[in-house]
Image (tube, rainbow, N blue to C red):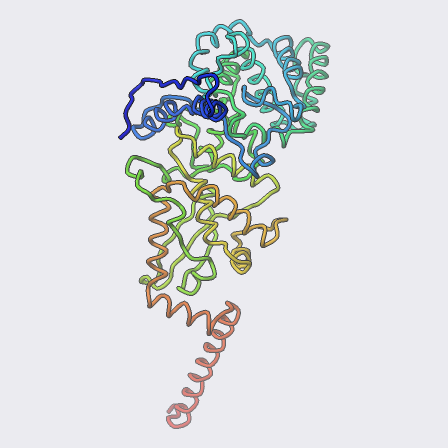
Length: 480
């Protein structure tokens, strides 16, 4: 059906043609490069488990996405650098201040960095889906230098309190130089700290990235090797105050995957150590719109309980049957929602949609929570169980939070981990005995305090009954 191979067909427009305007419009649309070849190579590489192709994609902003995915104070990488809509607080001029401070005061070896990045420049360009043919080699390396300097400075500034800063540069022999360095550091640090939260959110924007290797290369140009923490430790400590929090089971060691950029590292540090992987078996049509579990209050009708999960990833939702299958228990880690949560989730879901990614944990979590939280009663139930932490979000806003995310993932193919969870929950929910027991418990024991009071009354009744029997036996059969 589809033929033509690699041949490109051109459509000539003759002057005076009655359809000249329509043909010109058609030709312009047909000339758009959809970059399907790059996407195809990346998708095939993901299926075959081969690391190849672009890893930083320009994300299309659709209606309603502009504000959530907007880069606000600092552009990293090429895609938002010349944004005319809103000038950045930390532009290239400011990044030059940080770079000069690092070179002149901290002894960063610029020659070493530029030489290494010249060798790695071609690989770094390949990380971008747009090709960047308009960027010269010098411009591209300068961009990587300025952005890497800014990122490392932010990582350092976010690790220390203002009280710590006063002693950081006072231990060397040349005290006057240290004081001068300290004052320069303070001037830069206070500027960064004023906008630190938004800077971190900008660094986690899906298409506001540079290759992770560029940041690592600049760190290697600082001082002695033995005195430096790993770039992964530096980066993750920078984001420790953001939710979702780190999964402590994800260890920084030799088994880590090679990270493409900061958002990739952040994503890896938050997901469960196992599960949610995609592979070639999942090319069947298992999308979110075809998968469903009942809401929290509906699941109560089949003797399904909700409990807090205390360990592992903030995203790990599990289900187990208890008491010969009569009870079901869904464990969910504590959920915190902040003003930045929707932006963070949208960027992480957008990252998971990239063809080079093979773990869809945030996508699966959002789809599952959207099913569980359908009504205000569902939100109240999770709050009572301690799963939903105190938040400024209203009940309806919590529901809308996940409903909005689920709209973005409804056409996404879901991982086996989520499909298996859905199947187990639905199997339990459709069990007639579980439904009978769940409805009985809700009807006669709707409140746990009533249940405890009834149990206490039964215990007192039993004790009184046995005491009466003992008294009667003592009366009719007195001890000799």
